[in-house]
Length: 264
Length: 285
Image (cartoon, rainbow over all chains, first blue to last red; front, top):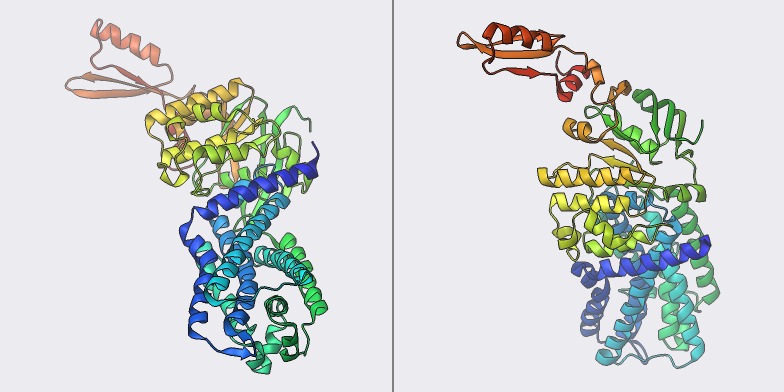
């Protein structure tokens, strides 16, 4: 049997199973998929101002929400559910079968990608209908959007798997992981205009991928001339790609080396 | 070491801190055998089994399971896992998936899986085929665990206290299933708290206490059970009399002559496996 093909085949099957299990847990569906839409509704309704000529706050917020959606569905979801799977014995059982760890990772990555597509589509449809979001018309911008989503999902997935060794138990995982995500969202210019944050906050946020993803999404959803209002007076597309790739490599190495199948 | 033994262990040691959980264990299990490992909680049963399953690494000693060192990493270990099946002690996973979904999915992992429908019948979950794992009773949940343990047609099956929480009828049908697997040629390593289970299923039993194997024997000869004095009891002068005898037949004949036929309330009791076992692990002197 071709082992690479078999690894991929089982990875795809695991992705389907993961999605099925996910959709059967109503709380996680609401929390992961609808929460960003609810936040967009609240922020879009409360903050009606424009932050630059022709740029509404909701336009700015959608960029941040799509970026932080990648962090929610990938990093946050995995760093919470994997410790639970460890507690429930799911991982121990899988370890006792011929299934390879790569298939498990592929399944998780597929789950994150599918959830991300659903979530982004919902945000864009809802934002357009409720708040009249402007969609980019230039195909090259959609290309940027596509690689941002792919690279961001991959980065978020491996970092979620890597971070899953940190929570001591499944029950406590949410309390460890959620505050980190929320703080990063505040610091990275998701809820506030990034340039209005104190510079120490900006510099702290610049160490982590969310700030760069958010900036990348702004380059997609905000007018080109808004770039001059960024901290670096530019979208810094090359730097965004570089930071995300570095985090992806770090996360991948760490996830593979530190992954724990059981508590001991 | 030859591959003809299903399990071969020499001088196995595993320490946690300064305490040796397994203190020099030798063990050989033959192909096609049902071997039961008995011992009190904390005796080192689970540690030994988890080393054999590849979950823990031995500190020293040699371990061969189906001719393979379970601590080996990488692709070879995955191929080896095609030939083993594991039924865990207590599980709580796949709660949102149905019986059929879980078993069919796990069948995909193996090169040579058993027929999914047949496995469902064998473990007696036909009526619960579309129930979610979370909706199953404790005993039904264990049967699902057993199904997942045997779906890959294992040559060697590990059963860790498999019938805990079963009602008597479910245990009997589970025992039948194990005998079927044995008849098909599988080797089975069983840990259990139930002595009657070991008696009913095992070809040989090994008693382990404080990290060491005290004795390995057939259930009938363990602890000299076959030669141990039997208790002969009868009613005489309004009260129960008893004597311990190495030769109970002789005692019964003598009594028969004395009572001239019918001995009132005669009983001849050999020590059962449980008594022998408790004596061995020092619970009863």
